[in-house]
Length: 391
Image (cartoon, rainbow, N blue to C red; front, side, top):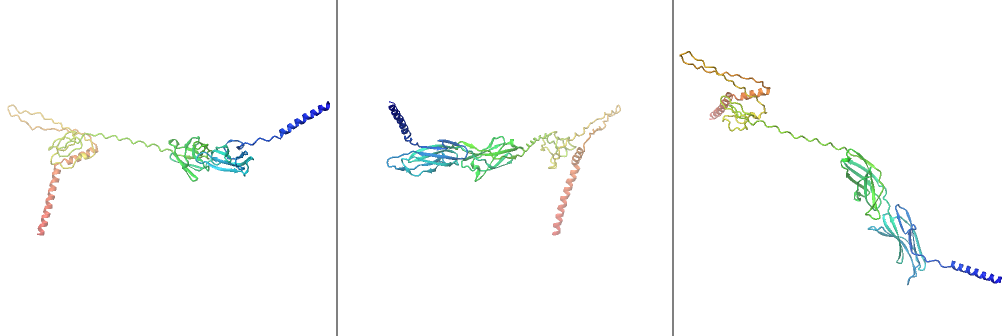
C-alpha cells in the first residue's frame, strides 16, 4: 500500500511538472504597430536637442505579399512650410516577420507641429512632435537720437521663421515693433518718434526677435540684446510772442489855411492881414484855398508838433475927451493898445514858428515871382539876340 501511495505521488508530481513545462513553452504574443519619439507618442521640445525615434511594424501578410519593408518619415510643420522628410527605411523582410526601425533625429529648424510616421505597405502609425524653441539673442544692436526720434540698427536673426522684432526701453515697455521688412540681408534698421517726453534725457534700449510658435499667428519672444543708450537734445524754448502794436491815436485833422495860403498840419490859426482864418480842427480839405497858394507846400508834411496858441490881443479904447463947453466935440483917433502875453516856447516850436513866419511874408513871394519873371525875360532876350546875330 505504501508502494501504491508512492506511485500515485510520483504520477501527481510528474503531471504537475509536465503542466509547468507546457506553460513555459507557450508562444509569445504578436508585436503591435507603434512609433515613439524618445519613448513617447507625443513630445514637446523647447530647446534644440537630438531625438530618438523608433517604430515597429507587426508581421502582416496579405494575398500575394510575401515580403515587405517599412520607413520612418517626418512631416511638418503644419502650414505653408510643411515638408516630408524620410528619417530611415528598413530592408525587405518576409511578411510573417515584425519590422523594427530606429534612428536619431535632430530637432527641426522651424517651430511648429510635426508628425513622425511608421509606414509599411499602407499601414501607418504616427507620433506628434511640437517644436517651440525661442529665437536666439539678437546681436549688433545700436541706437542714435535726432530731436525726439530714435533710430535703431541690429543684425537679423538666423532662424527661418522670424516674424518680427520688438524694441524695448529700460522699463521693458515696447516702443517699436518692426516687421521683417525692416531687414535687408543681415542688416536691420528702424526709427520711431518718442515725443516730447524724450527731450533732454538719456535713454536705454534693447531689441529682441519674435518667431513662430505652434503657428505663426502666435509668436515666441527671444531674449533681449545687449542694451544701447542715446541722449536726446533738449527742446528749444518756445518763442516769446510779439505784442501787437497799439495804434497811434489820430489827432485833429488837417486844419485850414492862414492868410498866406499855407496849409497847416493841425487846426488853422487866425489869418493874417490879407487872409482869412482856417477852420479849427478841420478835416484837412484844401478846396477853400486861395488861387495864389503855392502848390504842394504843406507844412503838415512835417512831423506833428503841437503849436501853442497865438498870443491873444487885448484892445482898449481910450475914453473920449470932451471939448470945451460950446465948442465942437473932438473925437480923437482911437488908439489900440496891444498886450502880448509871452509864453515860453521850446526850441522846436521856435524853429517851426520862424519857418512858418518866414513863409508867410508876402514880400518874399512877390520877390520870388519878380525874379522868375526877370529870368524869363533874360532868356527870351538871349534867344532873340542869337537870332539877330545869325541873320
